[in-house]
Image (cartoon, rainbow, N blue to C red; front, side):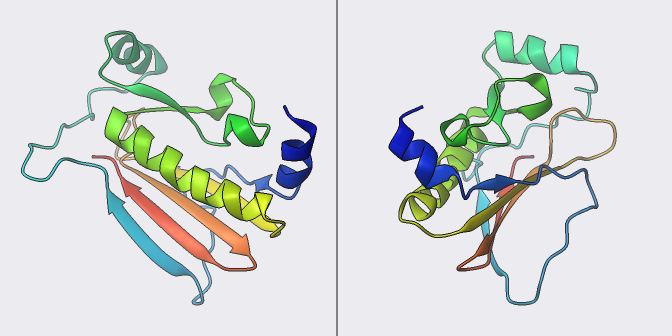
Length: 145
């Protein structure tokens, strides 16, 4: 990683929390984004109940690998840091992460949390809640399925 980027992102902290462990203050702004195509039937991923099934869908191009803690901020390319989501959701997460990384690069102290929310036993999250605390408190919700 570029040393100047490393210094800029040194303030970025990941708290990849298990479902139900996140807390939210009333000062948090909530931004919900639906990464689904309007008018298109929503896919149900309830049957994708193992990592192997999610990886098979990834190999077939139906799901993308997304990193909870962005690689650009020093996140590891390890399965513990990976979720499998549709391309539109992955693109939306990348857009949100880019916005947050720009805040960190400008010198703002940023705490970053990406929390996947699951339905039943599905290995594909139904939502991804990204929270940012620091100079400003913001919460982004990516609706996946």
